[in-house]
Length: 353
Image: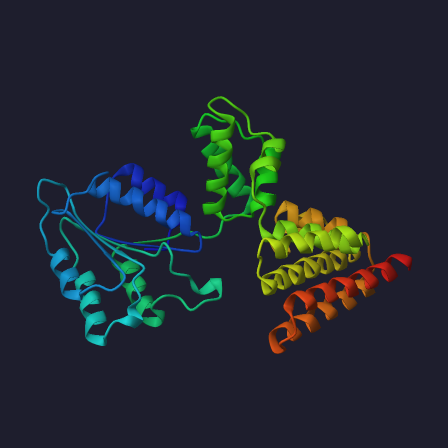
């Protein structure tokens, strides 16, 4: 059976025609956790009892897993076994073989759910949990059951979810307010849901989340504040640039993370500038680089205020500072401040040309 996504899995849940094996994974961890809970509620009930529900997390004895998988449901439709964030590399060869054998023999009224609500996937830049051993488990379940992969949502899909969540709380979230919320927080669903809950409580039933409410209550993420920093530098507003940097450091943002975000911001600006110079349109840029509306808007804005040469020199200075921060004992704060000074000088020269 092919790997399915959220939409197809919703249909399975609504039909209630449950199979024996499930494997829930993907980059969108909040959705993995959410749909794991929904599947458990559908098969074991909202308040599962110890006779028919068995959950394994972290280190566990394989023999206990085997025993749980063989139990017959007592006063329930299913015997549900849930294994969360299994790391097959931590198991001995005979133990991993036992798990695969138990999975291959799964049948009857037992529903096995392997779910990864926190373990990173390969495309997140970290080795996937279990490596090749985990791939064997995933392949086996794909053959005999259902594999659901929750991929990162596009900014448009995230906005749709936010508006839907607000509606369920009897609160109106206009498009512009949703855009601003994503601009401030990014597309991490866990953070967005937390911030949205705060906004809904503030506005109350029947209320509307305004842009002013978002500005007042929402904590901006690092990327959003870095936009302010790069814009202040490129527009040669030295006082504002150092004010933003001081605020970031006062809030104990990691210096290396600031560097990484600043580098990404300048690379985005450079990409957009070169693409626009080649005649590309905004829609094409979003497709090529998978930018959010806010990322594209800021990059286009800043690219018009400088030169290609200035951007190249700036990126070169950022790279040099990054190396210095990782290879010397010089104060990282001092290196950041010196970098901002250099970028301001480059920006000033770029504006005069």
